[in-house]
Image (cartoon, rainbow, N blue to C red; front, side, top):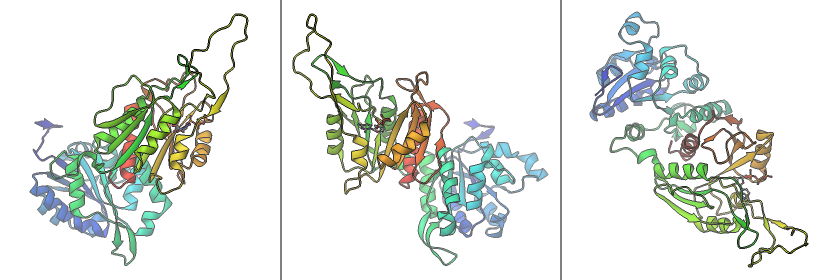
Length: 414
Ligand code: CTP
């Protein structure tokens, strides 16, 4: 098969961007292991990387020309930076230094490595490596969140002793771990299960709830369940063990998901509690806030001349709030949605705090937004202690992929 003008090797093609950190030496081992598996490895070294490993050793191990200079006439003549960035199945950045991550997050392109990363249309995997203070710095964490929202996957870093003599989180993942992450992304045996969410237990609520007025009438809303079902399906696709608690919807069950069908908010809460413990809970259901205080077992009849009956409502349990309350059963990550028609981010931020959840996806459900029942969603992600992140409008499946990508990263499976 020929892709982008270059014959694809049976093992796949990796473009390895080597950043300037002491962990760069581990890349030599990584290249060797990739080559053993028949994977083509082309390397780009930043200027700083050349202080840690020599282009000669990288060329000898990869059996490929090594690239490094954006303005090299020979490099550009042989292989423009655009082609270099496209002629791979996967782009890997290792070590991904704080500086490289910052450049990537902000779209800077001032050398070959950063230009290639901006020009690529291929999936990108980064293996961060830096001093633990640099890793923990809010700026680095902000940049990482931006990159994850862009769909960049991470492997590591690990905690332990560091070359600088300090101990903490920031050590680059071992070559074997990076290799496994690469193989998984190339769809090769020996990699982690697709997406690597195997063993993760997830609970998702979806759809509306239906609250009876009498045996034939009810209160419900327009929720279709498409977003919640897409999230459950995506979690399962990546190997998680998923329980989907769904109100009445007309959607098919997502493959590989255990579906519990409920009608009312109280049934939904009971089903969720029965599914605990889980690692992550995503509450995407549009739960009815109120239910009729009484639901007679017989149909309410019209009586000639009598005024219309009034329905007294009582509050339903808040499922998200109950799941997110501190306690031994609290999932490590609780994600809610916030359906708002005005002041979307401000109301969602208040909801995040009020309901004690970790993340909230705010969506505009104002009339005309097309969110309720539609196939598309425009959301803003709010997390504690992080700037809100507006995602470009996309299909509900795209929103699900992005969210599940972030969940995977949160559990170190990205
Ligand atoms: N939610 C829930 N149980 C409820 C109400 C809401 O689990 N009884 C969850 C929803 O699944 C969603 C989040 O709480 O993840 C926010 O739902 P939303 O309808 O936006 O907020 P409400 O709490 O109903 O607040 P309000 O209607 O005042 O905006």
